[in-house]
Length: 122
Image (cartoon, rainbow, N blue to C red):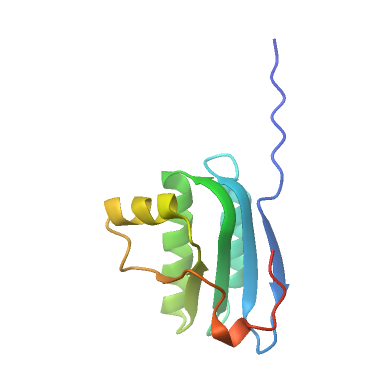
């Protein structure tokens, strides 16, 4: 019996005023959805001074592959003198970051950053 797994694109991207790129990550970020997200984030962090906001408020699950993609995007942004901010109020996700020692690694906001106040949200 064959199983048909349909993988939807786990993100939507738009450019906010001021040049910040907002990526709204949705659903599960796991070994099946990571390749598309990783390629997209690599593209967004390829230029000089990338400014990314990952809106994780509608993310329902993340595994170690997903954490790896977030770390890679953060490292690429910083290496190019840019920044990566995460927007989440998920106690579960924050607990995962704490238990993996990643809490202090990311710039985490529980609410939408003030400099993006006029930007549409998910």
